[in-house]
Length: 305
Image 1 (cartoon, helix red, strand yellow):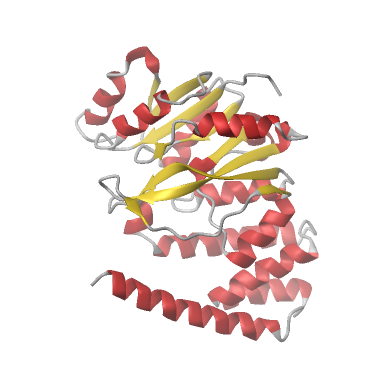
Image 2 (cartoon, rainbow, N blue to C red; image 1 turned 90 degrees about the horizontal axis):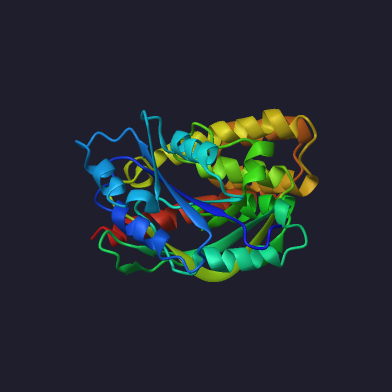
């Protein structure tokens, strides 16, 4: 690893003039100075408002424009045009703490194999006005192998915010970039890295502020997550499970996830490959899934009042 590696902060944006300047300012305010900032305009249709904001920063950023193709295509475009050794994603409506990149570079330098390690910080939620939102989540610390993290992801419903990561550019060369999924394009990419046996190192500090607002795909089309996860799960079965690329613990975690989600077609397909390896716990996880769904429904109705 280089002593002072160049980090590329890629900001994909579509019709995002309302928040873009805040994101750019957060990137420019980083205490780690060996950075480049790429703003990728994904074919915005806002009469030039997004472009105007980006161009107002002159040569302090690198401005790229492309036809609309979605977040994945904008991220991939940014990766293709970046000069850095490491990639850091910043959504146009999110914010970095000033020492986000610095803390992650320091953590990376402490790793035995930095070229095969992804650094991940914690995050917090803010509303449309930047006010904090209570956000209890499972928080990991320390080093995890990709295989171990795969188990935790599926068995414990781990959520990894893409903007919290610092990723070696080489990872994209080895495992490919972001897919065409609209909701889980980041999740799909991280799981590819996990199954490619990359390491993940988690630091406890909350260094990214993730904004929640009505304009997000995650808010407008939440059902899309389940549709795409089912599609991606079939891909995992076809490309990894059937080819013997999942460990026994990977398979169990994968089954647990689909038992809890009651995805009968998926877990039946898995069982056809490996047998019914959890005959009793299967029903326990299904009951857990029902209970969790009921609690989630009650909670959603409560907060809407």
